[in-house]
Length: 305
Length: 245
Ligand SMILES: Cc1cc2nc3c(=O)[nH]c(=O)nc-3n(C[C@H](O)[C@H](O)[C@H](O)COP(=O)(O)OP(=O)(O)OC[C@H]3O[C@@H](n4cnc5c(N)ncnc54)[C@H](O)[C@@H]3O)c2cc1C
Ligand SMILES: Cc1cc2nc3c(=O)[nH]c(=O)nc-3n(C[C@H](O)[C@H](O)[C@H](O)COP(=O)(O)O)c2cc1C
Ligand code: FES
Image (cartoon, rainbow over all chains, first blue to last red; front, side):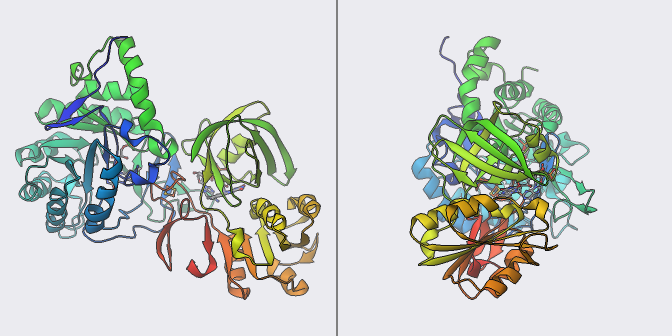
């Protein structure tokens, strides 16, 4: 087997392979440092962070579904200051590849505040802005469901993020994801991550109550893979900035498919919850699969469909 | 945490809907009393967390109750079949917190993880009283096993079909065992009542719906007097003083 090239580049940041655990499904990386070799993984998207520490939602926060799960963790996190002062420096000591800070907010000001701090943090390579959060000043609708609000967040964070690439992470709970993606690109986004979770709900039919305490939550896992592939394909065709594809990826084959659809890097979310070793396992499986498919360099296949 | 393939040695009904599952592997494991494992089940997206009742460096003994689809699938598995399991999860009980005599209180399947703790405490030369609570005689497990260890054993059943009629707290009040520390695992109402009623410090093993079961999805967080804690990784065993019921 000839040497396979797995490395990809995201806005000047080189990843040794395109595999990135998705935000919220891999903690701050540190939690798994003893269980696996983190440095096998191309990049790590850290747990979503807000300005202040948040407890998140009451439990149960998890509901199992066919082909995935619903989560309503509710953005539990220690706040941006702990992220930049403790978590990232600790991870940087043991991890050499791309560290992606995932930023959430409930107002434009909060996004800007957090992104400014994250941009100033040496250990962080890429900012990923989760716009699936409700806008408390906008009637509670998620920023990511309106092209205008998505563009406003993008502009505000780009104004404070200096040289660090900003990826806007899109919500799939929209009628036309392409128009939102384009609005973000026009507002200056350096890249896009898609998709986040789909709003879902499960009911315990014996107790006659919703399973998660918050009634609803974000559905993700293998069941959403075809929708994610479709959205990545549509968006990457319409935009010229790089896309990190996410949604339902659970094996090396899915990574190839996502990349053919247009993704430059591929995030793995829910699958980490059932198999903490899945990311390094996928990295190990890629060369042989590439060989079977006649691929020498992953960059050959990005967006070929 | 390790991801290991175990082979089923036996999987048998021992009480009402309750199974005893014996597993072996060919790789060293190091389980502490009160830790749990997370079992992958074909056809189910998430793993199922089950406490370890006893273990050696190459084997696990689990007790589980069929309550839903996942445990039903487990009950249909046969010796020789393989299970992919994440082991050595959670903190476990701290036997050093008991000076001389311990009270172990288990309710239902919560009686299982206390078994390995009981062995450890006895091996340290400590006196152990075990109180097991069940709804009825057909649910009783581990009675002979605890007796064989040489622990003082009290059983309480809600219908009075075995031992004291009533709650584990009723059995404790009636027999007034001597202890300087307690350990409990079982239904939340039982543990809440115990933590309120017993005068000494103690540890309680909690249950929560889990995502990863290993500390990185934050799906199982509870509020404690020491701030947010993950039941799977900071627990499942917590000090009585830390719990907000
Ligand atoms: C740390 C820990 C240790 C446990 N130890 C034991 C044990 O030793 N013996 C035993 O019989 N049971 C134990 N349980 C409970 C056991 O995990 C559940 O009964 C089991 O997951 C139910 O699965 P199911 O598919 O049959 O039920 P379903 O209701 O079909 O499961 C649906 C989902 O809910 C979850 N779930 C359902 N009930 C519980 C519960 N009580 N706690 C946590 N998650 C739940 C399942 O894991 C699954 O994700 C333990 C739970 C935890 C958290
Ligand atoms: C438990 C859990 C927590 C998550 N937390 C975040 C988060 O904090 N920020 C974010 O942008 N996305 C979050 N997500 C969404 C994932 O990053 C990912 O976009 C989504 O789950 C789809 O990918 P998947 O199908 O591989 O899970 C979370 C998902 C899960 C399952
Ligand atoms: S279940 Fe994932 S952190 Fe506890």
